[in-house]
Amino acid sequence: MSPNPRNDPPTSTRRLFDHDPSSPAVDLGAARRDPGRLDPASRRAALAAAAGERHDVVVIGGGVTGAGVALDAASRGLSVVLLEAGDLASGTSSRSGKTAHGGLRYLEQLNFSLVAGALRERDLMIRTLAPHLVKPEPFLFPLTRRWERPYIGAGVALYDLMAAGLGRSGGVPHHRHLTRRGALRDAPGLNPAVVTGGLRYYDGRMDDARHTLAVARTAARYGARLVSYARVTGIRRDGDRVTGVEAVDTESGDKFHVAGRVVINAAGVWAAQVQAMAGAANFQVTPAKGVHLVVAGDAFESSTGILARAEDSVIILRKWFGHWLLGTTDTPYQGNLSNPPVETADVEYLLRNVNRYLARPLDRSVLLGAYAGLRPLLAPAPARVRGEGGGAGAAATSAVTSALSRDHTVLEEPAGLITVVGGKYTTYRVMAKDAVDASARALGASLPPSPTAQLPLVGAPGWQAVGNRLPRLATEYGVEESALDRMLHRYGDELPAVLAPILDHPDLARPIPGTGEYLPAEFRYAATHEGAVRLADVLARRTRLAIERPDGGASAASNVAALVGPPLGWDEARQAREVASYRNEPTLAGLG
Image (cartoon, rainbow, N blue to C red; front, side):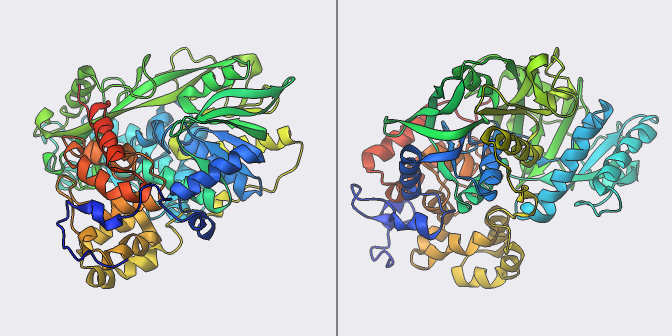
């Protein structure tokens, strides 16, 4: 592809990918050359395979649990199709607290097994599975009363001890006790009249949507067929046994069915609805809403995140890619499961609780965006559920505060349908393993052990070597080294592939107005490699403009649509529809 001889300005991004919109946007051979490359061709191929073949496992749900199930099953040699009603990670898995953690607050609830398991997974993510995406991050627990130091200190020490295990090295540094002076040195923005000292400890920071995408793309590299925007409308049965699903491709409107020896329901807050399609209704999912606010980076002075007591739980103010992320609420929710709102009461609760500790209170003027996610908390029918952690047989009378509601459960009925529900983002890999173990019983066959604890995700294997080359890459592509460092922690060892088109199209290195620090090359890569199907996929999950910009990225929508439209096969009319849809639908950036 030769450089654009007309030297159009960066806003004329459409010309970078001129081609006939009626022709395929990407060569069908691309999917065969790199099965982890998600583009229009790979989606067409996956759709054809889903409808034309019988698979060992059909996975319903493209959040982190469903993606984890697809990876676990494919890596054990099973043929897999994954169907997601929207975009990958478009539900809860892109609306979490962006932290890989053990759950320090669950120690107070004596849920030791949940914390220990989550800490093992946190350290696996940091050390082995996704070190480019999940990084150790310091947190400070501010002390305000004398009795808190021995009490909280014992809990944090136990947290570290559980992570270290029997002499094993954990994935993060150990905690430290701080005096008032030490706490204020780490976090000058705390109120010295309130804080008497602190405890510094560590957990993991991540971008949840990009992590889920990496899990899904790794599954594709091991043979899983992934189809987003494929909504399951029914469950097929042969007598008492589930034999597959009915679905509709919401892009084309075409209906199709997928035959499978086992169907695994990983639909999160929709899991009970999916099981009801199969004629079984032996549990309920009680959603709990968690709201987070994106706060300007200069609104609070600190080198560490803050975790502190709130009125009924804890409040967390954490660093997140140049901003602060403030959360979370934990309230029962009834309403639209796809777009839970951020309400005025949610915003006021978060600001009121964090301001108890700050010298300079936060107000709405420093808020860049907000989002709400739903935790799929389980209210099971005791006699019919098999699970772990003791939570399987307990009715969740208070889904918002019960620690047992954070344990996951695997159900094995009706025959041929496996449902995995509950759990925490950090424990997705264990949830997936348990679901695939259960599928072996349904398949009537033995499976090799799960290898996923040793399988680095897409972008991880050579990320450190790429990091060592950042000065050379900066010179080669004319991009600031600081920008490349940011991108390294999004793309890992795929960074050179993201940058490669810049050599032919230098405009791809110059940010589009209204997109902050993101390079056009990143939007392009979302369309050519990362499975974006709609404009919202690019602005809300492949990048995070939807929650990082006060306008939710609306001012840049037209230019981004013009950039990604050609590789996605959009004509100008489709681009206009995508922009209008993005600007008119409820966005993740809405503040109540």
